[in-house]
Length: 230
Image 1: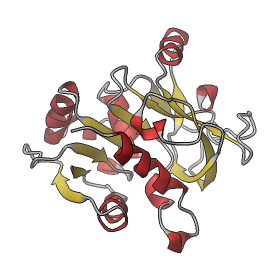
Image 2: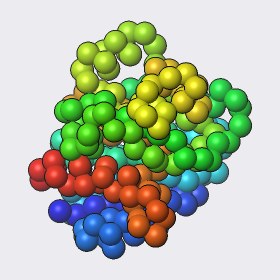
Image 3: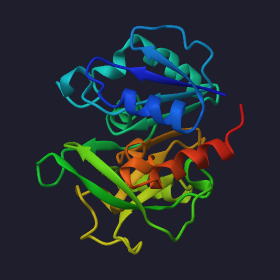
């Protein structure tokens, strides 16, 4: 099992992701520069958070055309696993690897704080190993995390079990007050119809170390490792 962490100009969570995968979870990790055309034998690709290309034009819109994205798309079409976190989620949406779009936060402000999310999908390996009734405390840091999809797409996603996480309160109640950015149906994470591409706005890599007094994010990575087949 080998993880590849893609680095775009402006990525700033790549080292956090590498540390958690390599040091905390004892996995093989390769950093992949955005101009690479070689995935170097990686089985699971991660698009990390940050501000790829300075978030100019629209978050993720330029990174979507980086050379490595041709390989990421081909990898996903072969059934390979891909995870996009925060800016990585935005890139996945721009590349149409997951449905929906990420709009400016309802408050039109950058938000950086702890939130709680509740696992929703039993099919996606990223959440299949989690307790469905226990809220996870995972931080967010974004200005464009307001997930949107039209009614037909939302129905399809709900019918296909493509909603991975929803924002909730500490007790696991999905409420308007617990929605930090205005995301439709409190959606915090989704997957594609095939269940091998995952996108989420909260940062599990920032909640996966005992030194941070929060290891809820580690449970998400452990769910992935428990369910993965390569």
